Image 1 (tube, rainbow, N blue to C red):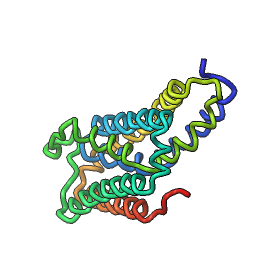
Image 2 (image 1 turned 135 degrees about the vertical axis):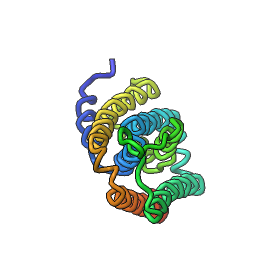
Image 3 (image 1 turned 45 degrees about the vertical axis):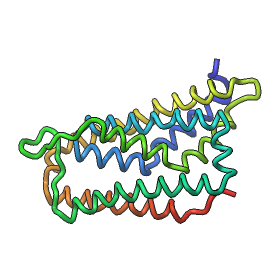
Length: 214
Protein backbone atom coordinates (compact mmCIF):
# COMPACT_ATOMS: atom_id res chain seq x y z
CA UNK A 1 0.00 0.00 0.00
CA UNK A 2 2.73 2.46 0.96
CA UNK A 3 5.40 1.27 -1.53
CA UNK A 4 4.84 3.72 -4.35
CA UNK A 5 6.97 5.92 -6.59
CA UNK A 6 7.82 8.14 -3.62
CA UNK A 7 9.12 5.23 -1.55
CA UNK A 8 12.30 4.54 -3.55
CA UNK A 9 13.81 8.05 -3.29
CA UNK A 10 13.03 7.87 0.46
CA UNK A 11 14.82 4.52 0.71
CA UNK A 12 17.96 5.90 -0.96
CA UNK A 13 17.97 9.09 1.13
CA UNK A 14 17.37 7.33 4.45
CA UNK A 15 20.06 4.73 3.71
CA UNK A 16 22.64 7.43 3.04
CA UNK A 17 21.58 9.25 6.18
CA UNK A 18 21.79 6.10 8.31
CA UNK A 19 25.39 5.29 7.33
CA UNK A 20 26.60 8.87 7.87
CA UNK A 21 28.62 8.90 11.13
CA UNK A 22 27.06 10.96 13.90
CA UNK A 23 26.00 10.86 17.54
CA UNK A 24 24.07 7.59 17.12
CA UNK A 25 27.02 5.70 15.65
CA UNK A 26 29.36 7.17 18.26
CA UNK A 27 27.08 6.11 21.11
CA UNK A 28 26.79 2.56 19.73
CA UNK A 29 30.61 2.34 19.49
CA UNK A 30 31.09 3.64 23.03
CA UNK A 31 28.49 1.36 24.59
CA UNK A 32 29.72 -1.70 22.70
CA UNK A 33 33.23 -1.00 23.94
CA UNK A 34 31.89 -0.57 27.47
CA UNK A 35 29.58 -3.58 27.76
CA UNK A 36 30.03 -5.78 24.71
CA UNK A 37 27.91 -6.45 21.63
CA UNK A 38 24.77 -6.85 23.76
CA UNK A 39 25.00 -3.25 24.93
CA UNK A 40 25.68 -2.04 21.40
CA UNK A 41 22.62 -3.86 20.05
CA UNK A 42 20.41 -2.57 22.88
CA UNK A 43 21.65 0.97 22.29
CA UNK A 44 20.89 0.70 18.58
CA UNK A 45 17.39 -0.69 19.19
CA UNK A 46 16.61 2.07 21.70
CA UNK A 47 17.92 4.81 19.40
CA UNK A 48 15.76 3.54 16.57
CA UNK A 49 12.67 3.18 18.76
CA UNK A 50 12.90 6.94 19.17
CA UNK A 51 12.24 7.28 15.44
CA UNK A 52 8.65 6.14 15.97
CA UNK A 53 8.18 8.86 18.57
CA UNK A 54 9.39 11.50 16.11
CA UNK A 55 7.27 10.08 13.28
CA UNK A 56 4.16 10.12 15.46
CA UNK A 57 4.63 13.65 16.79
CA UNK A 58 5.43 14.88 13.30
CA UNK A 59 2.25 13.38 11.86
CA UNK A 60 0.17 14.70 14.74
CA UNK A 61 1.55 18.21 14.32
CA UNK A 62 3.32 18.41 17.66
CA UNK A 63 6.65 19.01 15.92
CA UNK A 64 5.13 22.04 14.19
CA UNK A 65 4.10 23.42 17.57
CA UNK A 66 7.64 22.92 18.87
CA UNK A 67 9.15 24.61 15.83
CA UNK A 68 6.78 27.58 16.09
CA UNK A 69 7.26 28.01 19.84
CA UNK A 70 10.72 29.47 20.40
CA UNK A 71 10.85 28.70 24.14
CA UNK A 72 9.63 25.10 23.72
CA UNK A 73 12.15 24.36 20.98
CA UNK A 74 14.92 26.06 22.97
CA UNK A 75 14.04 23.96 26.03
CA UNK A 76 14.18 20.73 24.00
CA UNK A 77 17.46 21.80 22.41
CA UNK A 78 19.10 22.60 25.76
CA UNK A 79 17.87 19.33 27.28
CA UNK A 80 19.38 17.38 24.38
CA UNK A 81 22.64 19.33 24.56
CA UNK A 82 22.90 18.83 28.33
CA UNK A 83 22.36 15.09 27.94
CA UNK A 84 25.09 14.78 25.28
CA UNK A 85 27.50 16.82 27.42
CA UNK A 86 26.70 14.64 30.44
CA UNK A 87 27.44 11.47 28.44
CA UNK A 88 30.67 13.01 27.17
CA UNK A 89 31.82 14.06 30.63
CA UNK A 90 31.33 10.50 31.84
CA UNK A 91 33.79 9.35 29.18
CA UNK A 92 36.30 12.11 29.96
CA UNK A 93 36.20 11.32 33.67
CA UNK A 94 36.72 7.62 32.95
CA UNK A 95 39.71 8.50 30.74
CA UNK A 96 41.17 10.74 33.44
CA UNK A 97 40.87 7.97 36.03
CA UNK A 98 42.53 5.53 33.63
CA UNK A 99 39.45 3.35 33.79
CA UNK A 100 39.50 0.39 31.41
CA UNK A 101 36.49 -0.63 29.38
CA UNK A 102 34.55 -3.63 30.73
CA UNK A 103 34.89 -5.70 27.58
CA UNK A 104 32.76 -8.80 27.19
CA UNK A 105 34.63 -12.06 26.82
CA UNK A 106 37.90 -10.84 28.34
CA UNK A 107 38.54 -12.47 31.68
CA UNK A 108 38.78 -10.16 34.65
CA UNK A 109 37.80 -7.08 32.66
CA UNK A 110 34.03 -7.10 32.45
CA UNK A 111 31.70 -5.56 34.99
CA UNK A 112 28.07 -6.20 34.04
CA UNK A 113 26.14 -3.16 32.87
CA UNK A 114 22.38 -3.20 33.63
CA UNK A 115 20.29 -3.68 30.47
CA UNK A 116 18.29 -0.53 31.18
CA UNK A 117 21.37 1.68 30.95
CA UNK A 118 22.13 1.33 27.19
CA UNK A 119 18.37 1.35 26.51
CA UNK A 120 17.95 4.60 28.41
CA UNK A 121 21.00 6.23 26.86
CA UNK A 122 19.98 5.28 23.32
CA UNK A 123 16.35 6.33 23.64
CA UNK A 124 17.03 9.66 25.36
CA UNK A 125 19.85 10.60 22.97
CA UNK A 126 17.40 10.25 20.08
CA UNK A 127 14.18 11.60 21.59
CA UNK A 128 15.92 14.67 23.05
CA UNK A 129 17.64 15.50 19.76
CA UNK A 130 15.91 18.54 18.20
CA UNK A 131 17.69 17.89 14.90
CA UNK A 132 15.61 14.73 14.53
CA UNK A 133 12.46 16.75 15.24
CA UNK A 134 13.37 19.21 12.48
CA UNK A 135 14.44 16.42 10.11
CA UNK A 136 11.25 14.40 10.44
CA UNK A 137 9.06 17.50 10.23
CA UNK A 138 10.77 18.68 7.03
CA UNK A 139 11.65 15.34 5.44
CA UNK A 140 8.76 12.91 5.94
CA UNK A 141 5.97 15.10 4.43
CA UNK A 142 7.80 15.03 1.09
CA UNK A 143 7.01 11.30 0.85
CA UNK A 144 3.41 11.42 2.05
CA UNK A 145 0.81 12.00 -0.66
CA UNK A 146 -2.26 14.14 0.14
CA UNK A 147 -4.52 11.07 0.16
CA UNK A 148 -2.28 8.98 2.43
CA UNK A 149 -3.16 8.47 6.11
CA UNK A 150 -0.46 10.69 7.62
CA UNK A 151 0.12 8.82 10.89
CA UNK A 152 0.16 5.33 9.35
CA UNK A 153 2.45 6.40 6.48
CA UNK A 154 4.80 8.23 8.88
CA UNK A 155 5.09 5.16 11.12
CA UNK A 156 5.68 2.95 8.07
CA UNK A 157 8.52 5.19 6.88
CA UNK A 158 9.93 5.28 10.41
CA UNK A 159 9.81 1.47 10.39
CA UNK A 160 11.92 1.41 7.22
CA UNK A 161 14.36 3.84 8.84
CA UNK A 162 14.37 1.62 11.96
CA UNK A 163 15.39 -1.46 9.94
CA UNK A 164 18.10 0.25 7.89
CA UNK A 165 19.62 2.14 10.81
CA UNK A 166 19.69 -1.02 12.94
CA UNK A 167 21.38 -3.03 10.19
CA UNK A 168 24.13 -0.41 10.04
CA UNK A 169 24.52 0.20 13.78
CA UNK A 170 24.37 -3.46 14.79
CA UNK A 171 27.00 -4.14 12.10
CA UNK A 172 29.16 -1.47 13.72
CA UNK A 173 28.57 -3.07 17.15
CA UNK A 174 29.67 -6.48 15.83
CA UNK A 175 32.83 -4.99 14.33
CA UNK A 176 33.71 -3.20 17.55
CA UNK A 177 32.87 -6.27 19.63
CA UNK A 178 35.22 -8.43 17.56
CA UNK A 179 38.14 -6.26 18.72
CA UNK A 180 37.75 -7.38 22.35
CA UNK A 181 41.45 -7.85 23.12
CA UNK A 182 42.35 -4.44 21.75
CA UNK A 183 39.52 -2.81 23.71
CA UNK A 184 40.77 -4.54 26.87
CA UNK A 185 44.03 -2.58 26.61
CA UNK A 186 43.97 0.10 29.32
CA UNK A 187 45.85 2.59 27.13
CA UNK A 188 43.49 2.08 24.20
CA UNK A 189 40.39 2.23 26.39
CA UNK A 190 41.56 5.50 27.97
CA UNK A 191 42.06 6.95 24.50
CA UNK A 192 38.64 5.73 23.33
CA UNK A 193 36.93 7.11 26.44
CA UNK A 194 38.69 10.43 25.95
CA UNK A 195 37.97 10.77 22.24
CA UNK A 196 34.32 9.71 22.40
CA UNK A 197 33.80 11.84 25.50
CA UNK A 198 35.31 14.92 23.87
CA UNK A 199 33.29 14.45 20.68
CA UNK A 200 30.02 14.02 22.61
CA UNK A 201 30.75 17.19 24.62
CA UNK A 202 31.54 19.02 21.36
CA UNK A 203 28.29 17.80 19.80
CA UNK A 204 26.41 19.00 22.88
CA UNK A 205 28.01 22.45 22.88
CA UNK A 206 27.43 22.83 19.14
CA UNK A 207 23.78 21.87 19.61
CA UNK A 208 23.32 24.33 22.48
CA UNK A 209 24.79 27.19 20.45
CA UNK A 210 22.84 26.53 17.26
CA UNK A 211 20.11 28.99 16.36
CA UNK A 212 16.55 27.66 16.10
CA UNK A 213 15.20 27.17 12.55
CA UNK A 214 13.61 30.22 11.00
